[in-house]
Length: 436
Ligand code: ATP
Ligand code: MG
Image (cartoon, rainbow, N blue to C red):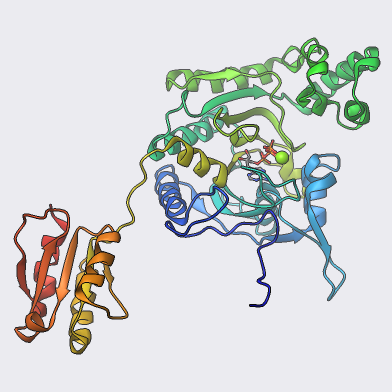
């Protein structure tokens, strides 16, 4: 056999349940359940669907995310279009593209917008559990809203999603919250931070030294144990926030408190992109090792203007779908069955057309039916029927079909008597298959 071709490292196939695979990854049934839940939840909050291209001009991310962010410095899949020399990038995140689209189509002309999108993102990182080079995000954005009420709405959307997926907030996922204030407040804090680290330059590791003047805030994110004390004693941004920023934060908290949602204010919570201000938040879990953030977001009031649009505030979040589904899988939470309701056994070759017409009528009436295709003995087909997880088998055998009938067998109740049903009237008894 010739060498087989494999998927690119860090980029995964999402396989149907039952297909064995070496790496632990969510299957497509879990995936589909997530998507259905997302559509339902976001529909109830009045969010609309938007789709943007996977490829964008490189300049969009350099300008939008900030030149010295991890993503732009070392994680982007950028390339030159060999046809025309354009500099392009596979999107590493969704917000910049959404904002680009909103500006390009003057979409906020008639007022603010609530939107969501879902799809693949690309980052050249070291692949590991919960961290891939192609991964998928749900992205939810509210554009043109300035108030803390919408920040709280964003967070509550997360809670509703967790609940409908069977996750318990506080136990499986916890909320961390912070305020980054406004750019001038951040600058004052940054200056104080640089002074603090400069005074203790001998304690900085090489990465921190490199970041000291380019991105000192990221030093606070260090995982180096020998720098923890230095980071703990660093000036806190919260002490640099003015009255308006503090009031905004207090209003977000007031809603969360009223909604009975527990959270931890984490003054060290900073996000990877430069565009955030005021509220930032993350939903984290202890169950996925160091890839513990399943969802992160916040306010980005300056980004629309920064990308050339008419100034407008905005807030949003990105959720890592693989991480969330891995979490659901690891916790062993119940997932809705994808088994068909009915498995059709067709042992009479001549009966295939009649059988298929009857199955079409059942499906039109809303009954999920899996048809045995490819022939085989009654015994072999029953084995398949059982393995499919179906509740019923419909048996199109020679004798039954000759009488214009089909036999119905309850696969999950051995004592239940077999019934004969008229093939021609499938739509009249379809409902019986859905009840009980
Ligand atoms: P991390 O600190 O884990 O690298 P991040 O801050 O870079 O995350 P964001 O840019 O905020 O992540 O993206 C939002 C979410 O997308 C993350 O919380 C995470 O769930 C998911 N995510 C980010 N990068 C990856 C990746 N390489 N593989 C899988 N999921 C990812
Ligand atoms: Mg990252």
